Image 1 (cartoon, rainbow, N blue to C red):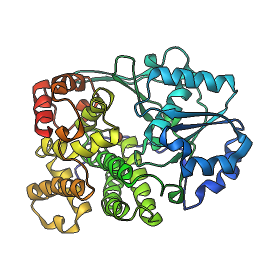
Image 2: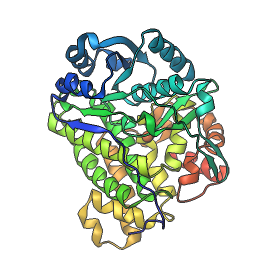
Image 3: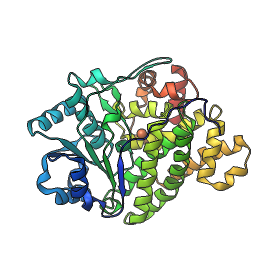
Image 4: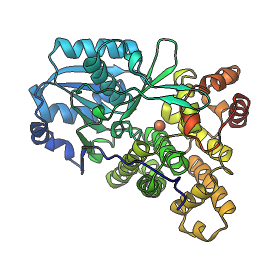
Length: 392
Ligand SMILES: [Fe+2]
């Protein structure tokens, strides 16, 4: 047990339904939430997915508006137009079907509709090296119901990220936008490409790994992180081997959901700090950025996070429990690297299409990301650049 002294714990009012065919219970469930005019929000790929079809079929005329084709890193302009469309259709609830962009966009539109002004005015700001200002957003938000079809776990948390006009990722934190209902329905996820589960699964794994050694964590987030690592590390290879395996998909969805509970209570660190820029400026999907970068970030934190990493190691492999802490910590890094390889994911930034000339700008951008604040090892810009070079 190595939790920093003093902690806070928050659980949301979210109701979770996890079963194949769970989407069929939406009509009854939505009645309890009370909203009657729902807007379906989804990304480009998920607009015609099995999940979106099942949701449309289950809800029929209760869906009065749709906003499909949300890009991977949704921007403030998209959110403005989406909120306008919701207002014009007197929408009183959002149905987010798809990955992180669908969820984050629904949350951002709910914030904009409730708080007014410009979306950027409501974002949190990190002043390096150690001042973090969180906005207090008190106006009541429209309810959100999420049907995730990737493992980003974005639907679980009060946090969200939206790209500003200048390419920087704005981050928000508002317990009012946590979905009222999440449906994990693995039966409508088997058409999602296995490599999307693999890369977004690495994102979920990163939530739990970073949660293990975050400067802000607690006994509950630690327990959730360990269980999430167990689920993800076992389920992801099964999904890649047999994409039609509903049980494997469900185990992966559960692992991801748990990782979302982790980052609702423990804050992500330098790994996510860099992944934000790799996405919004480098053009990588958040899943792909996570998939490549995680072992590198873990190595960077190896000494500062030795004990939490040693504990994480036994979630990958119970035998690691008997190893000395240093070896166990290293074995956690090796387990993640092995999983990366097993899932057929790239291991180096150079294999992603990223431009090497971009690394200094990415390092500079990361310095204003709050992930650096919550990371167990504080880093200078030179060290961040070194980390990027080692991942290259
Ligand atoms: Fe993430």
